[in-house]
Image 1 (spheres, helix red, strand yellow):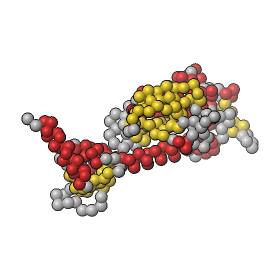
Image 2: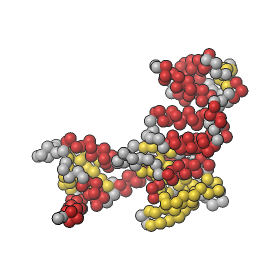
Image 3: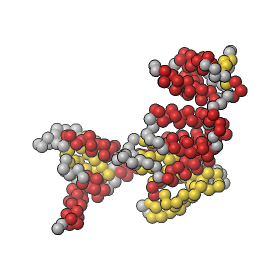
Length: 328
């Protein structure tokens, strides 16, 4: 193992110590995903390097920091802590480096701010794309939603959806991206409490939030709320909307990867032999026939829709409109 990896692990061990009154080698091993002997050697290395930690022996023993020694991160204000977490959660996909950095920051922030920082970390999701991912920069409203989550307050929002414009006061529970789009999962509070009514979850596209205000009223996720499950259910539901119309397409073999990358999970190979022209069969889907036709129009040179008729007709109509627009 390189010295850089060892140093990084020792920093994580120190930050883990700062977050607890006492740590055992077994607890540290689970946190760092290493063996117990390796965790024990790391603790001993910290002590030998001058870090003020000491072991306590016997039943209930472990390692402790002398006098609760902390890093320079104690100089951060709560707003600065939240801003750091917001920036970190928006910086890209959930790579091991980003996850490790989030873990370090949450462990290192001052105790009074740690709870809010932890809420931001666990309530933000960066996932594999549904489609194009060249520009997944979060809308500005996402940062405000994350600050509301950190502060455990409700928000008032104006939103434009398929049924028109609406207003709501909700508790933001989860924010996350799928490809270039960011989503909010939220719920109103249970009357007479601060808890979000998770039986009434609603999903909002962040780019359709027209206005957002943080309110002074409290709003928190109930203890039993499973954010990961709520996100997974939202993804499954939206996937169902996106895949309502399916088309069989004959594709030039060299273009299969490009189309797969473009459509993400909305594309799959169909078992069978190539057609007479050597093309392979794929199935692609979208929420409507016209939307699927628009997405496939740019692939006309390498892909032919063979069924259903409604998608072929939508492509023909689209082609006629384009030809009429540029005729002459």
